[in-house]
Amino acid sequence: MPTYSYACKQCGHAFDAVQSFADAALTECPECGGTLRKQYGAVGVTFNGSGFYRTDSRQGSGGASGGSSPSSKSEAKASPAPSGS
Image 1: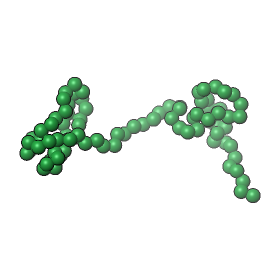
Image 2: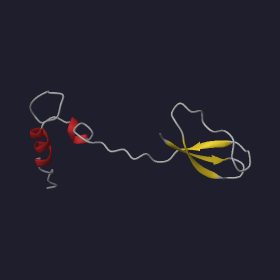
Image 3: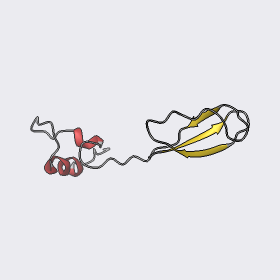
Image 4: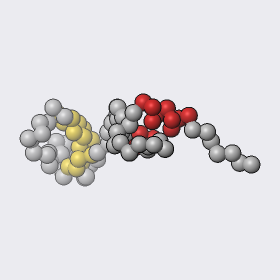
């Protein structure tokens, strides 16, 4: 079950509550009886596998396939940088 963070708008009391997805959101502060609001924080997301990076969607000079392959990744990494002279 997920843990939700709440804060009271009147007194500032902050706490966490473990609730089911089906449960209604809490609306009353247990300290002062004031109105609560849900607080949202940063969510830890990890992208694994191919297709999540900018270089995964680029194709080499040949081929029009939709997926990335190990050879297209190595070609993207091995391309020389443009020279300034």
